[in-house]
Length: 301
Image (cartoon, rainbow, N blue to C red; front, side):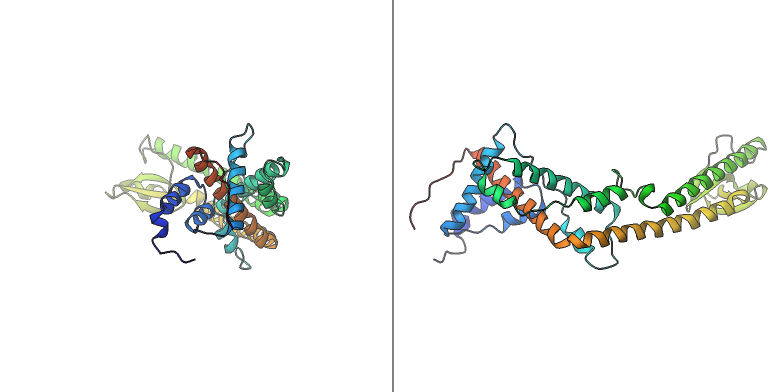
């Protein structure tokens, strides 16, 4: 049977979709709402009604599943599909959060009573969790979304040397600054600052020749110049070289993580789709509970 293009608006279906989308927590669920279409297929209607009614009962139970969709990980997975590419640290943190949510929901549905939610349990039967992926991300990325010092022995050594050199630079700068204050070359309240990534001392322009070093910047008025004392120039050059080495090692680590995840890409995208489906069903159930809806009986052929 053909329906006019205005059919959905005439029966208020478009307004229901707007309400449903507000209950979705993730992109996939929202897209499923937008893609909803009227159907007269009894089989499809029955499955949808079963899903929604089962979820309504679960959400109203004493131990409801926590339905929270994670950040959209599909773009991240698509990004690392190309060999040699990698996900950034914050993207791996989002992926780790996604896996935590996936694991918790799968565990909940698989323990649930089959008589209460047979349709939803069947939906989760073939969905997989990826402990190997979760483990490698946890080994590399900390809870703040940064690569851990322990992600590789080389990175640990680089960061240890960076810390040692930075401490040396700080000590030397403090010594130079103290002497400059004593000699009246800098103001008594002058402090070490950073210009162009280098630690510098603010010096009155008239006294700039009294401190040997490199001028990196000056104030808008031109009255203050920022000098990197000669005593720390070489140390800072070493630090800069190590920082570049650190970045290269981080990229190498992230590429190795991406190469490992690549093995599971298609399955993980399928699992993300399942989470989106659960989000979509949960939105229908929550709206149904809000409206006091019950499962209708279907008649006719």
